[in-house]
Structure formats: C-alpha cells, structure tokens
Length: 341
Length: 278
Image (cartoon, rainbow over all chains, first blue to last red; front, side, top):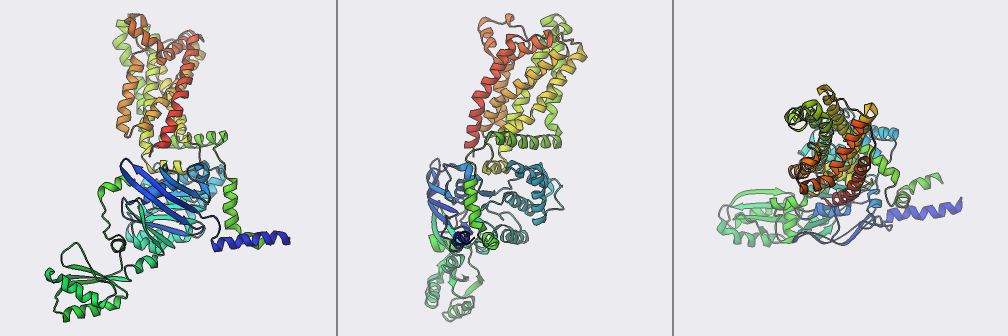
C-alpha cells in the first residue's frame, strides 16, 4: 500500500509542473511545395494540458504545420514528436493519440450525425453497442441530440463544426488539433464555438489550434506562436503579444495628409512609441498603453493646430500585432490560401 | 489510495496510451475497417439511388442494342448471337461499373471526410477497399440484369442454373479485381473528370479489343495476338464456358489468374498513391 502511493504521487506532480513528455515537440519543421517553402524551419514545444494557438494570416504555413503534425503531410525536413512518439516513423501510433478537426468539416455529408459518430467509433475499434452509446453521449454534450437523425445537408455551419469536434473526441484522444475552428462562422456562433471548445475540449486534453484571429487565440490559448511566411516570428502568452502593440490602438485620420510628420512628432512626444503611418495617406496608428490616454493625444494635436478628420480607439488586431512584429501587414493573398488547403 | 490514483489519471493515461498503442493495423482491423467503410458506401448508395443508373440501364440497353445490330451480321440471327454476346456484355458492364468506382473515389477523396480517415489509426487500405466491397452490389445488379435481359430475348444457356451462377460470380470477381486499376487512376489523377477520361481510354480497348463481341478468327493476326493476352478475353471465354456449357475449363483458371495479377499490381500502387495524395 505505502509503496504504491510513493510511486503514484510524484507522477501526479509531474503533470502540474509540466516536466513530463511534451504533447508536441517539433524542431526545424520544413515543408516545400515546389519552389515554395510553405513551412521553413518551425520549432514548437507544447506542454501536456496546454491550449496552444498558432496565429498567422492565410498562407503563413499554419495549416501545413498542423497537417504535418497530424500525419496528413509528409515532413520534408526537421523532426516532430507527439507525446514522445516520432510522427514520421510511427504515424499509426500518433494517430491513436490525436483527434483532428479540419478547416472544412471532416464529416460525411451523406450520413446523419449519429451515423457519422457511429462510423468513426466503429473504425476506432468500438463495438456496435459502445459506438452507439458513445455517439448518443457526444450528441447530448454538443447539443445535437434533436438533429441527430436529420441529413447533414440541413445543418448550419455551427452545428457542422460542433459535430466535427464531437467526432474528434470519440476515443478521448489526449491531443486535439483544431484547424481554424471558427473561420466562416457568424459572430454569435463563433462565441458559442469558443464556449464549446473551452468546456468540452480544453478541459481534458492538450489543444493545438490555428487561427487567423488574435481575439480567438486570446479567448482560447494559453500560449501563442505567430507564424509568417513559414517562420515563427513570435511566441508568448496572449498578454505578452498584445502588450507589444499596447492595450489598444488609436487611429487618427488627418484632415490634411501634409501634416503627417508634424502629427507623428507631436504624438511621439506623448506616447512611449511613435505612431505608425498606415498605407493610407494621412492615417496614423498609435499604440496606447491605456485607452483613456486617447484624450491627451487629441488635445495635444488640437493645441499643435493639426486638424483631425476622424478618430477611433480599438483593441489591437492581428494586423497590428503583425505590423509590430514583422514590420509588414498581413498581406493576405488569395493565391496562397490555395496552397494551404 | 483510490483518490490518488484518480488524480494521477491524466499522466498515467497518456503514458499508458502510448504504451498500449498498436504499431500497425492488424489483419482483423483491415477486415473490420473495410466492412465499416463498405457499410458507409452502402448507406450512400441507398440515399443516392441515381448512382445505380449505369448498372441498371446499361445492361438493358446494350444487350438489346448489340443483339439487334450485330446479331444478324455476326451469327446470322439474334438468338444464335446471344450465347456469344451475353458474356461479352457482362464483361463490358462490369468494366463500366468499376470505372465508376474510380470516379467516385476521386470525388470522395476531395471531401473533408477523407482527411479524417487519413488521421485515424485505421488500416490504410480500408478507405479504398470499403467502397469497392460495396460495389460488389453494383456488379451483382449488372450481372443479374444482363442475364435477365438475355433470357427475355431468347438466350437459353446450356450450363443450367449452376453454370449461370458460376459465370455471374466470375464476372463479379473480375469486376472487383479490375476495379483496382481504376481505383489507382482515381488516386493519381487530380479531378473526377480526368479520371473519367483516362478510365474510358483504358476501358474501351480492354472491352473492344477482346473476344467480347466478335469471334477472334475474324480479326487480323496482330490484333488477334493482343486479344489473346487481354485478360478481358479470358474472362469472357471463361464466362461462355461456364454459362453455355457448364464447363470449368482452363480459361476459368486463366481469368482468375488475371484477376489475381490485377490485384497484386494495382492494389499496392493505389494504396501508396492514396497515402501520398494531399
């Protein structure tokens, strides 16, 4: 009795101190499509139990990274492990430890919700009875019981994503990949999806999610890696990332663009960092340590005789985080999104 | 004590799961996964009955058309032509049916659900073999309808019930085996339309450059040489032997050998390119 307890207790502590095997460890991951280096040497280490966000614009290499870790794409360079298991060498073992929810609902359109969950249950070794009861349990948890027998064609985008998520959890895998879980959903459904992810997924497993939205990463992730052109350009907690661009952003449009340099000089005197001119002439973005300081800036501009056409204060967006970290915006090119899918 | 064990569950769970994970899919899993995915295809067939149009209409239409067009010219009259032609039509319909297997697989692979299949710890061959097992139903429908149409037009096979049943079974086996060729095409070509086009180019020479519709001795020597090595010719000859004479001849063996070779070559190719396909 006593000897068992001494063995068990240190094991328990290991979870909390996160000194155990990381859920994901990737070193120098590379994926090339022809001449394009979609992923160009990315390192990641995700602790067991963490919710980790990979943030970046379309074509940055987020989905490609995730697909390599999920055994869907061949790893062209570098090394990746999931719970200490080599992804390239033992994909069949890795597949027994992960769940994947894709960018496009990865469920069968011709089957009902119940049939989908039962099929995936059966494929993963549940017997018919187990598959049926697990399907019922998940449908209940995800609020899909009423729609269980309806054809999937009648499902809303949000219901489809929830079903997709439920399908990833059938065998309770310890690591879940979520590829842009709310892209294309309306704001209300997005909020519901976030709740679902927090309550039903992040509770029990490690999560690696990709997103284009800073607010989504902020809502869900413990830590974020920012990816751009296949490279990791920053990593930290959501607060650390946001503080790099200030708590909120003041956007000022000048009546006369010619006064831009005067305005920059005036504002820089008040704030820690000088404002950044946006590509549009006469528009300045300034990071504010505190939204309440917007007033001071406007008064200063007024005193300097600089006329302002419009003013807004907003929370930082991914664009601003990007601008601050990389010095360029999130140049979302339509051509690159095709390579990601 | 019990509480401590429960608290330790997450870490123990993961280590135990890694240790308990199977390194490869077992033979039992191959069968179970294939059957699960065959069930999926059968459900889809039931929901989209228009997918069965080809195997329902083609036997009816082609049997009537070919018999009345070629019957007089080749065998003197329609009744005399039927024993030569029905096995040919059977082979042709089976090949058309397995062409659809490749096209449907391509359409399926473009859908998100195939991503999930690839991310699951299932036998790699199952997503290909599952739909093919379900397609046995299609070959069976085509075979039964072709024979039925033949009977209606006056075909009286000498092999009796047993001979006809054996011939039908051989056609179903041949269809399933040759379908691996089209499944492979489905995994290497990027659009369903292209699969259709390429499959046509494979199917037409295979059916028409065989003994399916005309006796081989009417052909020029170089063509006869190809016709004699064409596996479809052996399937057709074997079907004739079984249905018309109730005889299990060497042709049956050759036909089955052709099937085994088709599977042995194209199944591994298909699985490999399916795994690589993005």
